[in-house]
Length: 271
Image 1 (cartoon, rainbow, N blue to C red):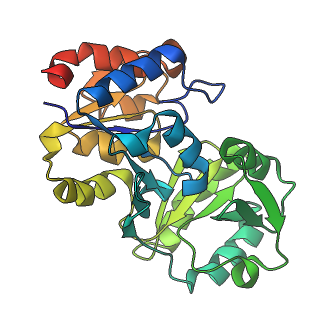
Image 2: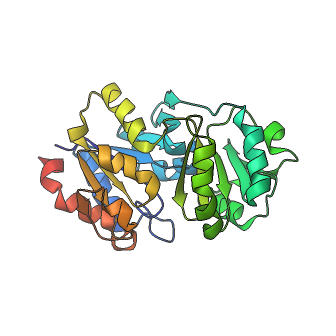
């Protein structure tokens, strides 16, 4: 039986307009009424995830948030933090130097704000819109951004992200986990942080086995949880490399793919 469903947000739970459609909302509410817990799993900060958690009434049904791709995990009902990992502050001056070399822009989250040296950068503005957060300018990212930091992003044009991601992975090997969640975001996380590892740490706290977990996603930062879950579901709009790690391919995020997946596995949800 499925007891926990982990859901990526952008491109998975929400459609391209960043909303949960009525059919998908109805399906998820029905699952919760049958005793299934929901866990929203995203690279977003807690502030950017809570409005969707409120829509889904997660605090009433034992829901959870995996934020920053797994560097922060909290219970919706109590706000209790179950997992918390921060970046080693010594990497920040190095990241700032890589910002200069690559032309990418560094940013991070704190409470309801995004901190960056370039608040008008178009990719920073995308993150502001997605999370409903305001950009705050700092003169020196390494020293002026609020500390400690769960996650940094290096953002820029997709071709620049593709060019520099392998170099950054090599430069910070063992000290940071470098991955990308969208074509224009490079995520800079504490070592051994991804959604799959976060779920692996979370399940024993909930008294659950991986066979009782369904995970749904569409992007490269979802691969870890698709591989770990008893049932990994990739969206039709996912990259082919992501689909290769899934047990089931559902319809797209614009075609109620989550509702379709829940319907396909309904016997494992309703008993």
